[in-house]
Length: 113
Length: 110
Image 1 (cartoon, rainbow over the protein chains, first blue to last red):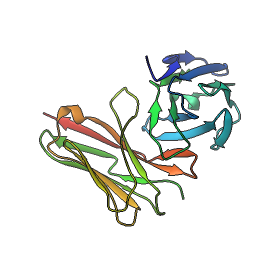
Image 2 (image 1 turned 180 degrees about the vertical axis):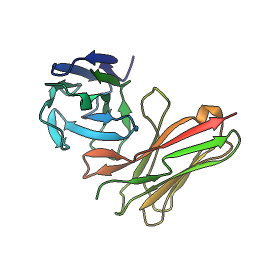
Image 3 (image 1 turned 60 degrees about the vertical axis):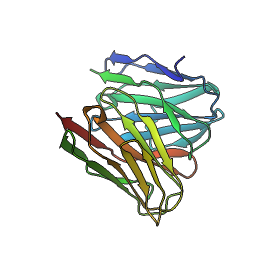
């Protein structure tokens, strides 16, 4: 069983479209994150959720809206996609907020054309 | 602020040579974590350092945490092609998230 799974793995879409990426973890962790990795491999924190509550929103455009229906899921919805949104998006989870090992999903490579 | 600076950004070595990446913070860190990301893969946790001056080893990898808890290093002895990837250090920020350094991408030629 994959500990942190996200779908889809690849996503190619046109500018202006709306898309969602799903993430699920079966580790029983309290905290989940979304990271964006650009072409230079920089991993930038986007959102941090603890027990379904948003605790970090790091200067992310409001076109990005995370949703956590329960502790095991953190989905990312993106409206009005732009070329600059092209990146690899990683979901991750950890037992607690910071200070503990983070487990990453396989990543979703988003390409906006 | 919360950013950790990591150098070098890229490093190419011949197989068998040693490799070191450094991570520096302007503020005292409660802990530092290290991750490895293989090409096309996702970051995988390697280790966490917590104590001042701590040194931990994993086979050919040696991790150090500075006495002032403001810097850390990862040293690989006698690199192999399997060591290829990007190595990230990460700090806890405000107890809420992991903030990553920009990573050091290691390439190894045989």
